[in-house]
Length: 421
Image 1 (cartoon, one colour):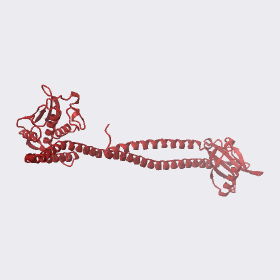
Image 2 (image 1 turned 180 degrees about the horizontal axis):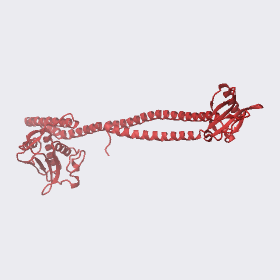
Image 3 (image 1 turned 30 degrees about the horizontal axis):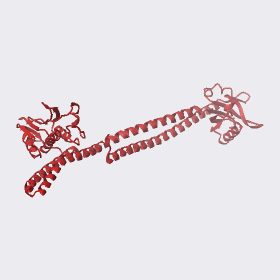
Image 4 (image 1 turned 135 degrees about the horizontal axis):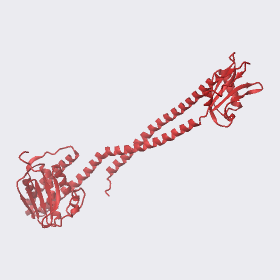
């Protein structure tokens, strides 16, 4: 597995940091919204309970009447629709012998307030002369929301109070269920936001990762392209400096190699700009046969290379095409076992044949990939990859095939320029 460079590792760390920040921001926003929703729901439920008991207590207080003897009559209370829906219902009246008491209980006595609460309720009603809201436990220990509505006589004196209570348990259960669903929903949304953030940050960083990868590829290809001429230049300089009689010839050879290095650097920079998207190549009509002949002549140690050409014109970039041809020939010389290499140029086609061991069929496509090492690839795996890249840039292809009689044939296929072009 290919190890990550420090720059790529930093980008991956930045991606995870971005993902965490995205998830944390989403979590904070959802927490604020969930808190508002929970508080709003709690207040709404409390408001609904209070309105219900007030409505029932006020309505039932009007049902209380006086009989012919002038005594309060509560006979109509249990039959009223408002009384049927009440969780707790009773009537409080003063007791001459002691504190106020429940004179009529229409639900279980355990649901009604105890004596201390009744005394407090009665005092509040006497002071405010209107319906009173409060929360109190019944004698059975269950908490209720209460409303106590006063019942007055002809003089306006409060002589009784109708107590109506609602059990908040169902409302609390529904509220707790809402809390659980909100928690699960927020957790799911945070996880979804983290996943989306990770995906988006990955897409955003893809161009940077591709740029780093292209940079690494360029450095590897530059090293591959410059290694041979630099080594040859060193040998030529050492030969000229060690033998004064060979100095003039060595100087001429050094100048030729420097010119070649200049063309290589120009081609490498052009390719780097094209891959970075900052420059578009200009395809001009050129004689492919002449370009191949000149390129082969400039290569060192080509005694075993024969060139056969026929005139063919293509649209292309001369530096890039020359680079592709050099790679094909050098690849054949390096991996062809030192056997003769035959270069032929026909209509839009450059074929380079060696007489070496060849490449297995399963590897003939794979060796064109970058960083692949094989019998017919360069040591760094960039030579044939460059050939394929140049071919595709010119609308052509590159391929390997077994040569008749043994060996390997590498082909650079380009669209031939026609009269209509």
